[in-house]
Image (tube, rainbow, N blue to C red):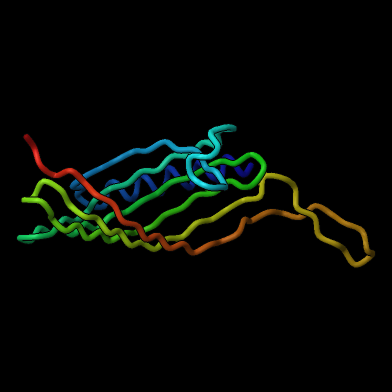
Length: 153
């Protein structure tokens, strides 16, 4: 049931977001959710996907500014399944005669996660019973830095 709810929510967010605005750039990424240091574990795979669109680009002499919207999900069989939606502002400063840019994205979003098993609650007689799962809401913040090759030779 959680998987069906998750897929329906994700598809509805996707279709509403794509038809509401003009998109300057669009990307799709497939990923694997992992807990640990990057590049230290490659298996098992916990699949996920993210759709990202740039809805506004502001170009100045020495910089670009982007307003992005991201929606995605991941499935981790033992930890949690989650869907998320977030906005991002990215500042990109041109370097090296406009052939390289320093990128600094900052974003804020909403993530809703579901535990993959049954949840139990103690009743008034001291026993335990299965309870409905509505998931857990989370607020997330992203901050990054990177470089982009903007030149063409």
